[in-house]
Structure formats: structure tokens, C-alpha cells
Image (tube, rainbow, N blue to C red; front, side):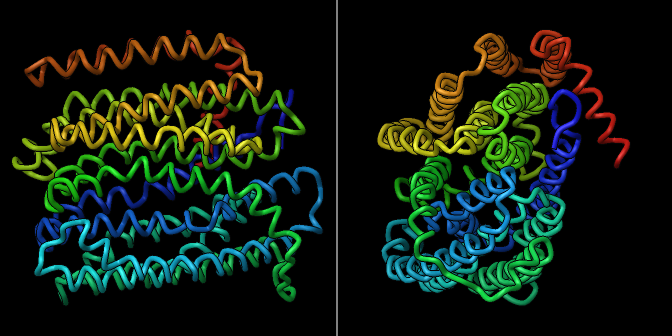
Amino acid sequence: MTSGAGEPTPSLTRNTVLNLIGLAAPLLVALFAIPVLTRELGTDRFGILTLAWVILGYFSLFDLGVGRAITQIVSGQLSRGQIGAIPDLVWTALGLMLLLGIAAAVACAAASSWLVQVLRVPEELRAETLQSFYLLAVSIPVVMVTTGLRGILEAVQRFDLVTWIRAPLGVFTYLGPLLVLPFARGLVPVIAVLIAVRVAALGVHWLMCRRVMPSLQEKPRFHTNLVSRLLKLGSWISVSNLVGPLLVNADRFVLGSLISVSVVAFYTVPFELATKVLLLPGALAGVLFPAFAGTYDTDRSRSSRLFSQGMKVTWLVLFPIILLLVAFAHELLFLWMGADFASRSTRVLQWLAAGVLINSLAQIPFALVQGAGRPDLTAKLHLAELPFYFVGLWFLIHRFGVDGAAMAWTLRAAVDGLVLVLLAWRPLGFTLTPLRRLGAVALVGLFALATVNVLGEPAARAFAAGLLIVLFSGIGWWWLFSDEERPRVRKRVATLFARN
């Protein structure tokens, strides 16, 4: 879908906003729910609950990349008009994901007892933690098949439906445990509610897929000859899907094993606050992935423009947010969680905020490389990073405690972001000049983050932050965007607000 000189229609902007709504809706509930859950469940139980949230999000990675492969292949077939082959591909992929989910459920249930020991769960909580992990294992097939169904909706650009499902699901991830508290304070009923919500989401995803793709109402067919195609593409995607979140989330498990599970809360709270900023680049990357998959072979110049503009918009929007997070980390944590969290988690939030800015930029080249059919590049990068990251994480936690985990996360994000940009540029032939400009602005911006942090008084920090935001917004708009790009951006923003 293009308009005028091959430029994307405003639907791309609209889809990004819809995707953002679905990802951001839980944020307001989380801001209210997390302090209440911490107080009512206690630090230890809340630490285990945060690990359960991570595990639920991680389950979809057991699909060997088939869910992401559905989106990539279906997007490509739609762009080439090969619609007739889609139903067989979808049914085969969903059947394969169900089988993989059952196998993963058995493996996770068998490993639950070992995991409770590794995490140093207090003796009085081990029985209910083990039962909770068993429940989580049973939910793996549900989560995996849901991921495949969501991939179908994304491939056909129905981000409106994805949003109307994702937003309530995300809200109940935090609201569900709150609704249980008047009746029970244990982990088992809380986890059971989370799983019930996932089952409901599976049913709604299935109804929506049948609506947008009526051919799925035909008799299911499983074609073994399609399995190899799905696994060939999905195998490399699965490596990134498995190792990537491990690089992002392993710090909490390592903290729990090296220090104690109670310390995890003092890291998770600022982590949740900082990484919520990733909702914007995540929403944009989620929309760009099928766009890259559908245009890379047929319209390479459009892929190039989408990549360049995605990087610039991400920086222009996120830098002011990150600057404010760094400048007022202590005040935000104090107002949200109280003095204890503010004193122990301020540096964690500041380090993670800088890392989130870098990681946000990295999501655009990640989506491009995978959408272009080269998931092997991102997989090899993540595999190469993994041993160095764990060594650095272990060393920095031993040296600096909770702050060290945040330092390791940010340093890893910096290396990952730089290499991903190079992977997107060199083999895919993008112009280097805009990337040089963006890199220079990003380096100066990171220096500004460090500088504003040394100012003591809130008033001084507020003045410096305001001045830097105005300065960098002007530089970003007039130096990063070309004369041809600025009118297009203004037009898309005006069209978006006119529609809403």
C-alpha cells in the first residue's frame, strides 16, 4: 500500500499507534498495581510473581520461531498475490506449534523443582512456588498457539484487532492478581488467574483469525512437506527469540541466584519503569516487520526509507523521555514506591534508562534484518554476545550488586545496537550518511544524560533537561530529517490526529 512516489500510506502510522495502544494500555494499571502487590504479597512473593511474568512472556519462544515465520511468510505471499497457499501453511504451522508446546510443557514441569532450588526461594514459599511453576508449564501450549494466531493478524495488517485483544490481556496481567488479593494471598491463585486470561485470549484470537481469513473455516490440513520450510526459517528466528529475551531478562534470575530473590524486586521495579519506554519502538518495529517482509524483495527503496525514518523518529521521540527519567529517577521512584526503593534503585533506573535508549534504536534494524529473511544474522550476533554478557553480568553483580546488573544490561545493549545497525547497513546497501549523523547525535545525547545527572538540585536539573530537550529536538528535526522528509512527517502526524 503506497501513496505518491511509493511512500507508505498513513495506515503505517495508524498501525503503529494502534500497536502502541495495545502495548501501553497496561502501563497505567501497572503503575497502580505494582506498589499494592508489593505491599500485600510481600517482597519475596512479589519477586517470584515478577519471574512468573517473565516466564509467561518467554513461553512463546519455545515455538522454534514458527510464530514469527508465519508473519514473514504470509506477508510475503500476500504481497506476491499467492493467497491460495496460505491456509495450508497456517494450519501446518499451528499444528506444529501445538506439538512443540506440549513437549515444552513436559520439559518445564520436569525442571520446576530444580528451578526453585536455583532461585533460592525461601523454605516457607517453596511448595506454592513449585505448584505455580507447574501451572505455568501447563499453559505453554496455550501461549504458543496464541502467538501463531497473532502472527496471522499482523501479517494481514489487522493491528486494530491485535490492539483490542492485547490491551485487555496486558491490563489483566496486573489487574488479575489484584482481584485475587481479597480472597487469597498465595501465589497459586494469582498464577491461575493469569493463565485463565491467556486461555480466554487464545479463544478471541482464533475467532478474529477466522473473521479476517474465512478460508481457515475449512477442514484443518497438516502438510509435512511444509514443516521443513517453516523450521528452516523459524530455526534462526527461534535462536534470536530464545537468546534475545534471555539477554534482556536473565539479569533478574542471576540476581536471585547470586544474592537472593528478595533483591530482585529492587531491580525489577526500575526495570519495569525504564523498559516501558520500549513500548514505542516495539510498536513501530512490530508494524515495520511485516512491512519489511512485504517490500524487501519487491520495493527495496521503500524498505530503505522505512528503515531510515524509523530510526530518526525513534530517537526524536524517545530522547526527551529518557532524559527526564535520568534527571528525576530518584523523585519518580520516591513518589511511586517510597523512600526505600528510591534509595536502593535510583542508580539502577538511570543506568537502565540509558540502555533502553540504545535498545530502542536497535529494534528497527532488528526488524529489518529479520523481515528481509536474514534471521541468521541476528541469531549469530546473539549467540556471540551470550557468553560475554553472562561473564560481565556475574562480575559486575559481584562488584556492584544490583547496580552492577543494570550496568551489564546497558553495556550489552550498546554493543548489540551498534552491531545491528551495521548488519542492516552493510549487506542491505543503505546510505551511510544519515547513520553517521544519527550516531553523532546519539553519542552527544548519551553524554548529555551523564551530565544532567551530576546536577544536585531538582531546579537545576529541570532547567538543564528543558534546555537539552529543546536543543536536541531542533537538531533532530532540522539536521536528521531531509527537506523532503519533513513535510511527509508533518502530513502523517496531521492525518493521524485528524482520524483520531
